[in-house]
Image 1 (cartoon, helix red, strand yellow):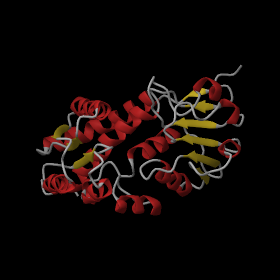
Image 2 (cartoon, one colour; image 1 turned 90 degrees about the vertical axis):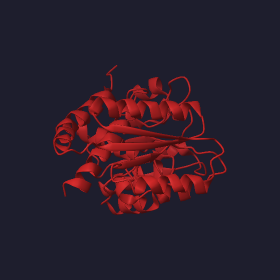
Image 3 (cartoon, helix red, strand yellow; image 1 turned 60 degrees about the vertical axis):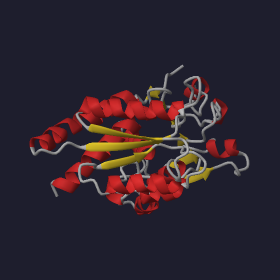
Amino acid sequence: MKQPIQLDGVEVANDIKRSLADDVKELKQKGIVPCLATILVGDDPSSATYVRMKGNACQKLGIESRKIELPEQTTTEELLLQINMLNNDEQVHGILLQHPVPSQIDERAAFDAIAIEKDVDGVTTLGFAQNAFGFAHYPSCTPAAIMAILDFYQIDIEGKHAVVVGRSPILGKPVSQMLLNKNATVTTCHSRTSDVSSHVQQADIVVAAVGKPEFIKGSWIKEGAVVLDAGYNKGNVGDCDYEGCAEKASAITPVPGGVGPVTIATLLKHTVESAKRNHLS
């Protein structure tokens, strides 16, 4: 049986980071240190792990990582005050509010409080709209990572039928828009879609972004389809049944080691680009 191409996210991420090294060096020679501020509200262990991973990635590339940790009982108003302080800090080039936040906080209000020029995670309503029109400086990082993987492996998008399973405002919806802007024909499936499998079976490109472990079965995959799994669930499994999907796919991302590393590299890229745009333009 022919094995599918494994779309190696670590290789793609390393390529992105290598391309950033000279930019970081150039900025530092001018006395500018790219800085990403991360805000963590509460003590969710998974969120803390993600923030730590992002901080470590910043450190390895020479980017400053400023961590703001707020207590679980933080109010929306207190969080907005913190975001506003970072908006006004010229030393900060990117702001990342770790999702999810505690239930008493208006998450959308908090996201939209981030200045568009510092929205390196692509979470604001304005950033979403710019992405839909195809001119966002900083599209949501996971969708941008998916597009980077397709580009790195020179996988043709134009004219292909892409099926995105999931419609979150920071993953499913924006990646659907980005694929559409690259001239794919896009179907977006969600929790109210009847017979999801019938849609996936028609796809040349499948993007799994549903947040359910091994939701997409190998029997759903059309022979030769490209599968990009943006899910990450307990037990180190994605939203696809990897073994089953790999039997039919021509190319597939592993979990872990697929979309995740590229998402973090994209966040670093956006932070460096923000520093360049604010200081060298």
